[in-house]
Image (cartoon, rainbow, N blue to C red; front, top):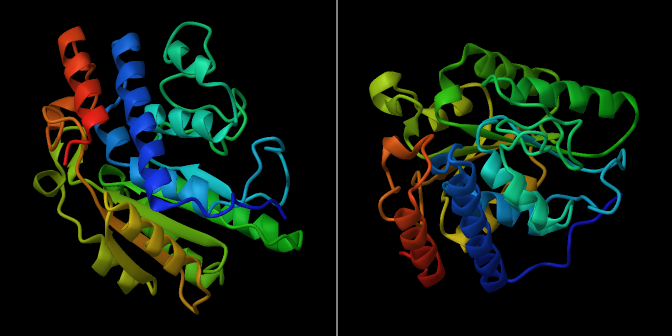
Length: 280
């Protein structure tokens, strides 16, 4: 069984998160396209998961017993690529090729382009269903890996998410699938509740899930929530993390305009300075 790293301290995780945020804004600026808002909101979730909870080995990314991380909100590739590079799946030098012609780092992830990518993303709402297939196959093969699925606000409007949510407990996959919701309150066209109001904690609970809520930018709280989600329970677990879209950059925070918009040169410099200082 591939193992996670030795437990990484909260201060170390915070330092990694700063590097991830700097990569995100730099990548989107250089490409002049991409999705910075939903990438910045997911940083603490991805860092705590990849460094302290996901059982994987970047030197052996095809190990059949590895845990799977499935990015259902597939447009958040700046976040995903930066985490994978910092974790050692490939060189950080590749990040400068984001969204460029011929680069393996395209706007949506391709599982055949880079090590560590478990699902080719793009169409939203499919990650939980994809995880069910993996989990069923793992059980048939006698393997013990888990599937961690990150979902975003907008895709919770998709019916397929809820069909999958009811299927996980029905097929007894609660100890093989853990969901994480990046609840930043904004989707492509604006504030999520104005477009389609959802209540993820109540909805998941209604389908028989144990719901764990946390502040998605409090690294200690995120780490504790993921630890709780790992504990055996008769119910499947979902971590609903309350986050801020664009977190860490003042003019991007809670701003629907930066769902899929690149910063200018002046904005990049401002963003990098704020990330270095640790905007509260």
